[in-house]
Figure (cartoon, rainbow, N blue to C red):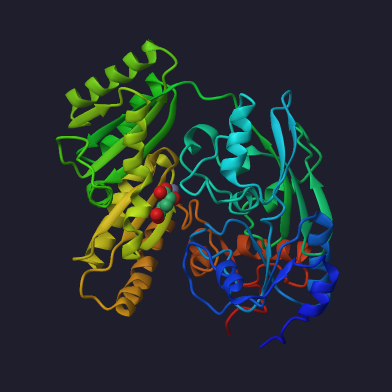
Length: 470
Ligand code: 2HG
Ligand code: ZN
């Protein structure tokens, strides 16, 4: 058991009020949306300047105090959970917009800037920050980068990785690195920026980012299709992709829809009840785009790829249809579902889903199984609800068993055990299903370069050799 950190020395390094130890702050900052409940952290630090972050990292190295970098804590894999009495470093007070360049179409922000604030800043300047998810109101840019967050428009705009033009990080050694500085072209060897994107706070603390903005989106069209059989998803995707400029192609199953309708007290959007539904969003700059989309709908119904369809007539309709997809996670949250976030290449998705479904059904004959996700990115969210009357501990045990079998299918398809929610604490035991032993060894080597004393987010993503259970 490590000795408690000398918090008086930490407090002496920073202006007053930057180190919190009250029970409420410890409880709030010690957890994320994964709702893993562990003993609270030793303290929470709220730096307001990069120099303060560097001072905290120097202190941590000197006293061997583990640090947990913390953003909006909207992660679902326990990446920001303080699991062993660490000091949480919240970037929430480092939240300024520093610079905007209309020629480069970039905005430079501190790590604690909230996603929605960046979206609004860009919109007010006639541009768009296109990364968007249900947690945009509280997730922070630093956390989005540390987890390479994706969201609802990846098919068009990519993930956070594609938006980061420059990155400033304080490494676990306490060095300040200014990476890529907004350049479009920079062929000077290893692009270290990309090591920090998705590193889940294990290599450095992201303190600042230069983000690439896009042109504002044209008016959109949205439609919902009832899809009777999985293979038709790809027929639909290819047909729409050939006819219109797609910005989203999402999926949900009827069980997901039923949960949303009940939670939100809504009517069914389509007369047909179908095992799956596809939500399609496309650019609708003029009537021609809408006609092209409608022609695909007609063809799809004639071919039996879709059994029913509804097309949004205006922006309010678009929002109503999106609500059916966006509020699934929230609608089932009270039932504390067992979650998986898996991906394969898009072309494999129908076969993969069917195979995983067989594995899951065989193991949970009476548990409600929900599928939804981002078909255009090959990313599926598999949620299993605890059957009524089943003891929660027994359900958790069974879920762990089934996960292994699901991940065997993932590995057989060359897929990923975490498409967009990260690894954190929840998925680290399964990393080997998606990354080879040589890759994990290389990751450990990289960790040792940037964080030789292992003070940054220990136990997340993978265990370093010393932490590994014997
Ligand atoms: C979504 O796509 C989110 O709705 C949440 O990534 C996924 O609840 C989940 O499993
Ligand atoms: Zn998702």
